[in-house]
Amino acid sequence: MNIDSFGKYRNIILPIIDCISVILGYYLASVLITDSFLVNPTSAVTQKELIISIILTIIVLQIVFRISNRYTTIIRYENNQDYIIYIILSIVSALIVSLIEELILNMKNPSIKLNLAIGFLIGMIIVASRLIMRYMLLSDIVNKGINYTPEDQKKLLIIGGGYSANDIIKTLNTTLKGTYEIIGIIDDNKKRMGYSVAGVKIIGNRYDIEKICEKYDVDSIFFSIVNIDNKNKKEILEICNKTQAEVKVLPDLRELITEENLYHSLRNVEIEDLLGREPVELDNNNIKSLINDKIVLVTGGGGSIGEELCRQIMLHNPKQLLMLDIYENNLYSIELELKSKYPNNDIKAIIANIRDEERMFDIFEEYSPEIVFHAAAHKHVPLMENNPTEAIKNNVFGTYNLVNACDKYKTKRFILISTDKAVNPTNIMGATKRMCEMLIQAKDKESETEYVAVRFGNVLGSNGSVVPLFKKQIEEGGPITVTHKEITRFFMTIPEAVALVLQSITYAKGGEIFVLNMGDPVKIYDLAKSLIELSGLELGKDIDIEITGLRPGEKLYEELLMDEENLEKTEHEKIFITEPMDFTMNDIEEKLDEFRYILDNDINDKEVIKETMKKCVPTYRNPQEVNGDES
Image (cartoon, rainbow, N blue to C red; front, side, top):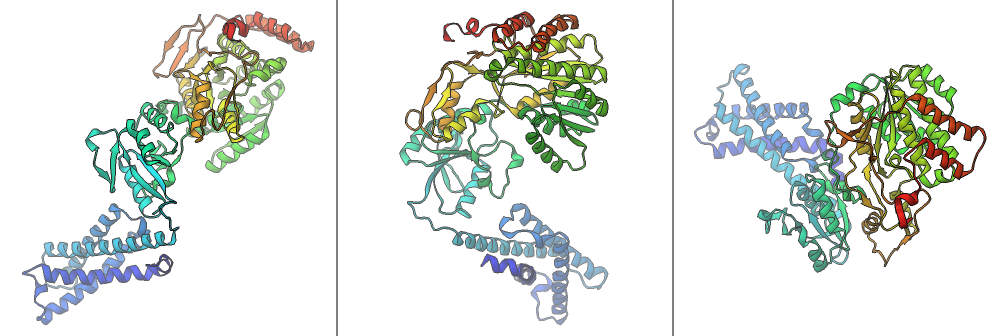
C-alpha cells in the first residue's frame, strides 16, 4: 500500500473496509454458529431480518467509531490497546442494534449471546484489517528508505532485555531496517540467558561486554535499561566506555520515552551518567507551601544556578517571580523561556547590580519580596585572586546590601548560596563567601528575617566549571589541561543542587548553614579521562592531558565542613546543618570597616588585602599551608 495515496483517501478507505467487515462478520456467524436463524437463508423473513441487521450494524458502527475518534488514529502507530477498543466498540454496536430491533422494530431478536458473538467476530475482522494495513504501510516506509548493504550496516549491541529493548528492536526492524546488524542483547539476569527478545538472543552479562565487542567488532552500544539504580548504571557504562563502540543511553525519566519509537529517545552518554548519584527525593508539599503564592526574588537569575532556581521555583506557583541580574543576555534568555512556559504567571526580569545599595532598596520597596535566593556572586577563583577588591565589593558588600534590605522591608527568609570553597578558604573568592556566611549568621540574631546559607561543591555544566572547558578543549583537538593529577572536587548536577537548596529551606528556622551531601570526591584527572572516552577518543593516542600546575589560591582537596563545626542531621539524608557560630553584627561591622578602608583608599596591594582577609576571616590560610609540597 502506498502511504501517500492511503493518507489522501483514508477517510473513504477505512469506512468501506469496516462496512465489508460487518458483512463478513454476519457471514462467518452464519457459517460457524449453528441453531440460529442465520443458518436458514431459504426463509424470506430471515433473509429480510438479516439484511436489516447488517444495514443497522453498519450505520451504528460508523456512528460509534466516529464518536470515539477511531478514524483519527494513525494506523501504523496503533497498539494492543487500540485493537481491544475496536473489539469492544464492535460488541457495543451489535448490542445497540439488538435493542433497536427489539424495542423499535419489534423484530424477533436473536439471543444476547449470539449478538455478542457477531460483534466479537466483526471486531476481530476489523483488527485483522488494521494489522494488514499497518504491515503494508510500514513496508512502504522501509522500501522508501536507504538500501543498506551488509558493509554499510553498523554492528549493534543492546544492553538490557526488557520492554525498551523490545521497542528499539521493533523500530530498527521497521523504520530503520538495514541500518544496524544487531549482534545480541546483554542482560545480568541469569534466568534470561539464551532467551530472545523480539527475535534477538541474550548472549551475555555485563562482564561479557568487552569480549563480545572485540569478537564482533561492535560499532554501537544502546543502553536501554530505564529502571536501574545509578550505581549499577555507572558500572555498566564504565565497562561500555572501555570498548571502541559508540555508546548511547535512554533517558531515566519515563515521561521522556515514547512507546512508538524509543530509538529517537536515545542520547549520548553524559558525564552525569558516570557520577553514580541517585535521584533526589523531595518533599514537594513542604516546598510548595513555602513558595506558593509568595513573591520570590532570585539574584544572579541569569547564572547557571540562578536559572535553575527560577525554573524549579515556578513549579510551585509563586505569586510573582523576580529575576535579578546585571548581565542582560542570560537574564533575557531565561525570561523568554519561563514566560513562554508560564504565560499567565507574573515573571519580571530586573537589571540591577547588587553593589548598588540604593537600587536594591528601591527594588525591595517596590516589590516587597517575601523570599530571597541570593545566587549572585563572583565565583571564579583565579580571576578573584587577581582582582580581590572586586570580589570584596560584589560578594561581601553586595550581600551586605541585600541582607540590610531584607531586614528593612521585612522579608520572611533570605537564602545565601554558598560554596565548599568557604571552608578553610585558601583563596579570596572562598574567603569572601565565608565572610557572607558569618554575616548572615550574625544578622539573623537581631532581625525578624530568617537568614540561612546552603553550602555545596561544584556543579556540572555551570558557567566556569571544568566540564564545559574540557569539552571545548576536546573539540579543538586538545590537550586537556588539568592543574594537578591528584586534585579532587565534589560534584553534583545543577538540578540536584537546586532541588536540595529548595528542600533545605523547609527546615530553616534562621541562622543555619545547610551542608549538602556531595557524595564521594572525584579526581579531575579521572573526569578528563572519562570525557575523552565518552568522545570516542583514546588518551595518549588521539588526545593528551597536560598537567599545568596549581593556580593561585587553588586547593588540592575541597572540604564541606570546618574543624569547629558539628553536623546535625535533618529529615533528608542529603542535607545536614552546621552548628551556628557565635558572631554578632558588631563583630561583623568591625570586619567590614577593615574592608571599607581598603576600598575607600584604593588599596590594590594584594598582600595587604590578604593580611586583612586573615584578620576578618580567621580560617583563611595560604594555599601552601594546606597543599604542602604539592603547591
